[in-house]
Image (cartoon, rainbow, N blue to C red; front, side):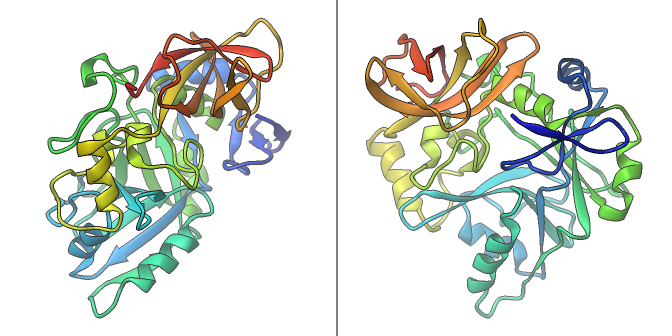
Length: 338
């Protein structure tokens, strides 16, 4: 969680890692978390990638490639979708919203070029046009759950943790889930207007947003995922997978594990011993005794819960076991039932 001094507005930028280049905080991460929870602040997410897909075949085409029902997606309706490998491993997470003429995809920093290359390779003779518009459009995160309407900037509303009508939750019911009160959307603004948009309300850094995400048990691509991740392990079936749609790449693995098996790993919310001043880094092994049973994926300091983390552990790790990360004890809250 290192940062480097930056801009005149007091921001300290994230110096390395996935969110490098956006403000980590503005001097008081705890206050910034409270402002986000109260719906009073927003977050600069301008390093996120933005891809557009236009043309009359755009929705049916994306539907055929992804885990989500997109063919009949109404305008200004937000959904989450995944692109999987042939073996069912997560390759891209898509924040999807269509404005009636163009489908907008918000993705993790640095991943837009690879996404565009994949989509271009799958175009064939369809009437679609794909563009990486990250240079022209920026993302602002805000604690709202309202869809955008005509005349407003396009925004993607996070569905987490509301289980879709043809989806499945591997953890708590929606009304008992730790993320049940989470409100979050990502608003798209012309990059030239980003500073004016950020000046509309108080600012919070990405550290504050990440702490609230961790507390909500919300998985994030390239944080909680690796080259072996299947959606079931992160409880992503609840928001990103439609279980009765037609064929797509990786569907066999999704159906087989859901119907006949169990995921080999599970995401877990961890409460870290905060008696020391140093926290373990993301990527640190999680141990049960001498045995490595998983790894930390995101580490944060929550203003009420204290030091918290998300981690991915082997499915059969006892749920009441206290794990250890670099000498620091970590107790579990179950997010995916073993």
